[in-house]
Image 1 (spheres, protein in one colour):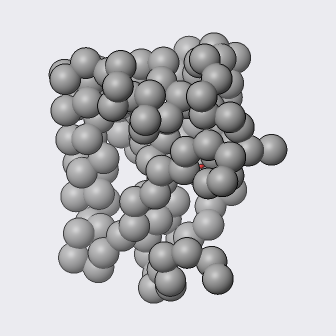
Image 2: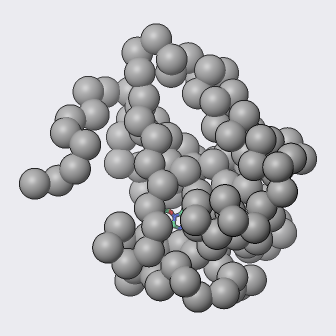
Amino acid sequence: MPIDATLPYDDSNIFARILRGELPSKTVYEDEFALAFHDINPQAPLHILVIPKGAYVSWDDFSERGGDDEIAGFVRAVGRVARENGLVAPGYRLLANVGFDSHQEVPHLHVHIFAGQQLGPMLAR
Ligand code: 5GP
């Protein structure tokens, strides 16, 4: 069920629980600002989620309330995951769903990294 991204952050969401170590995840990368892990239901041969460690609902929320250090750290982590997994030469796709129309399901900001095949058109038609 897509979420309303204007709602306040809900500390019980799945990614908050992963960050607290209450739920397992297959970690790809971690630093002070970000955690990257494999999506539980991959939509491409490689499907990684990158999340900031802070409590932000969406890209919108993060860009408004996040500190410059958190934003820089998160953006650098996304790029680093792509480079360290050899994705730059073949190419990859970044996606961040926000709110109802975009079908955001988990109310903690996440960037999807898709790779490993021709990724097709940008949007379903
Ligand atoms: P959204 O639709 O919010 O952009 O994407 C949420 C993503 O989180 C989906 O691709 C879904 O498969 C993934 N996901 C949901 N629950 C879990 C979980 O418990 N662990 C992991 N690794 N991924 C999850």
